[in-house]
Image 1: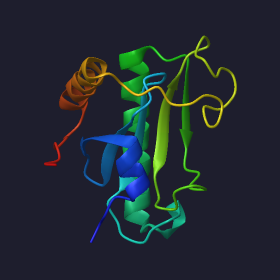
Image 2: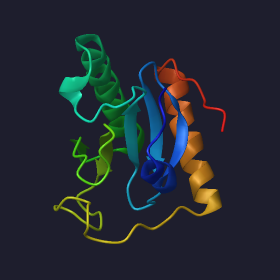
Image 3: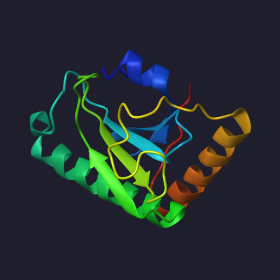
Length: 143
């Protein structure tokens, strides 16, 4: 049975589910930053997924990246599946701007996260849900 890694649960806000992946918003207001976590147990690498799940993850990652780029006017999209700190397979999809605090370096380890205020978090979630409602078969998760 799928269980979200405790570190991801602590660092993120659940947005909802796509057909394969749980979609999380990283609690760092400096970047529009989603994480896709395939709802499969004991998977740490993309190649450990079935071929069908690999294709679905690629489809979801690509669609999310397109949607975020359009919704937030990104200069660049960063997509990564590192897993060095959290081994559960997850894919980061991060909107980057030439003027963001970390540009042009990676976002990891440069600056501490700036957590969303309640109002900013709700605005970001509303924007994301509007994008997903339009472009995805998206299911909200009961928490």
